[in-house]
Amino acid sequence: MPLSSQSPPTKNVTNVTSHVVDFRRAWRTLVPIGFQVVYGSSMIRLRQIALVAHSLDQAVTDISAALDVDVIYRDPGVGFFGLHNALFCIGDQFLEVVSPIQEGTTAGRLLDKLGGDGGYMALYEVDDLDARIDHVKSLGIRTVWEGTGDAIRGRHLHPRDTGGTLVSLDQPDIAGEWAWGGPQWKSRRASSVVSAIDSFTVSVPDADFARQHWTQLGINAAVRFVPCGDEPEGLTEVTMKCVDSSRDGGSFQLCGVTITLKA
Image (cartoon, rainbow, N blue to C red; front, side):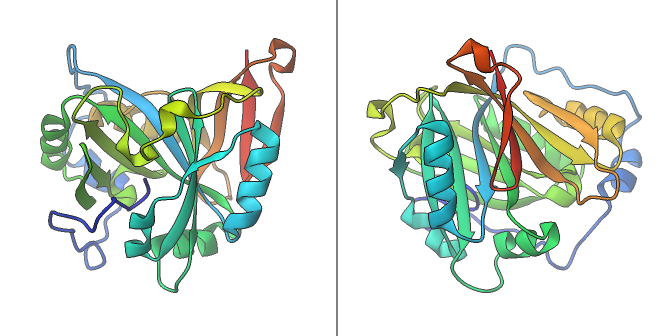
């Protein structure tokens, strides 16, 4: 659910355009390197990956063919942000693709920055949203969107503060439910290619620092970091569990992102 809800945001949207910081410098002034936060028995789980594409129709065609999945939902709420989208269900997780339908969108600016299609956002299910948001805000992390949908609440963390990619923390009213996926996701047809989203990869200038930073923020889950070199930082790879074990280690491109299969 990238920057959307099934209705316009019900809470204040933070104005982030006038306050841009370097997350590496800001974090180093706040917390000593190596400090880690332990959340005890609280839960954080990767539930959704969002990609961004110039052409939604082409992306849907490519994803459907490569993963043997059907579109299960198109969220009208993303129109509030100048987007249209399509969602696919993989197990009880989701792959989404968004595309701009007007000028001046966050997704459009990212497409320009990347020079093409690419990764957009990672969404985590949590069971302690308020505590987590209080924690990250205490470390200087801003939210760019705070909203409520049917039976779920979500907060998007500013990517300039977290580093690497946009991250959403979402808490459904009932654990395991996922209203961002629409009302019919549990009745979807199973894919013959993949059964789950295992993890994702974020390319960043300093992989070790990003790993420590996300750990300290409490969001270092199902993610790995690699150096981006001279390329733009961002979400560059998604690892999925394959149904056919003989395809273990295989990979292909979807929307500018590498999809790697894992048995």
